[in-house]
Amino acid sequence: MTSHAATVGVPARQHEPELEGVYTVKLGMWVFLLSEVMFFTALIGTYVILRFANPDHFAEPGEVLSIELTAINTFVLICSSVTMVKAFAALQQGDQKGLKLWLLATIALGSGFVGVQAYEYYHLWHDGFVPVAEIYTAEGGPLYGSTFYLMTGFHGAHVTIGVFALAFVLFKAMRGSYTPQKLGGVEVVGLYWHFVDLVWIVLFTIVYLI
Amino acid sequence: MSTEEHTHPPYMKIFGLLAAMMGLKVLVGLSSLPKPIAVALLITISFSSAILVAMYYMHLRFETKKLWLLAFIPFPLIAILILTVIQEW
Image (cartoon, rainbow over all chains, first blue to last red):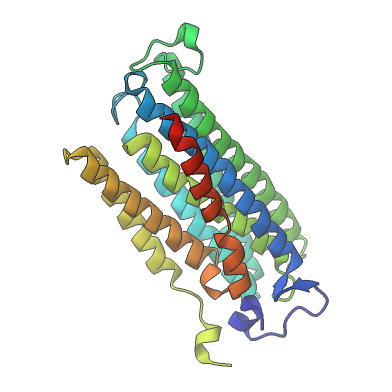
């Protein structure tokens, strides 16, 4: 019996093709997320190597980047993971109103995260912390700026795409497209969203605290 | 079908744990602990948080063993990547 059928006690999806007990849409999302693990590992690995090979190009935690603001932003993203999992749980129980409300909350929190990051970028840019060597004037060196914007920029792009995907899922939910027997769309977008949160938990530590 | 199958994971407890671990990370990051100790603590807490999200929010804990196997494929690949590029230091 598949995990989602087990948790709500309803018959397993009758017509969804499965591979080794996992329905194919979910399996596809997991495979995609595993490729994303490699992608972010490459970015973070690059940063670590450059950081330790060129310590003069980087600054100590808190000298350039705001730990406090980003800690609050990290908390916002963790909250959005909770609202996402509550949305899925609501759908499993057939609570359509709960599904929509929790999805809306997730979108709001995700948008807030992106907004705060944009605000952070604006102020960092004005402080001379830029990804361009010729105009870099902050502590450390231009390697710091370029690696920071590369990693956080790619993550921010992932969050933005996730917000759009969630908005699409909310739109479909408002049309009644999801039921406890047909919850694949919500589940796979949820997987993506939790992954984005997971990556940020690691990124926040490595970029802002170490 | 057992009762356990009708209950959801403790999402709010996990949220509390994640929030506490995040707060602890910030305290460690801002503290004046020796760098190696601070780094070891931060990485441990960070990966513990990531595992909690994967296990309970992504429901990996309740998935099939074959999906577990799939989920762990990147780790040997990451090890190969690290071993290959570490020579660049």
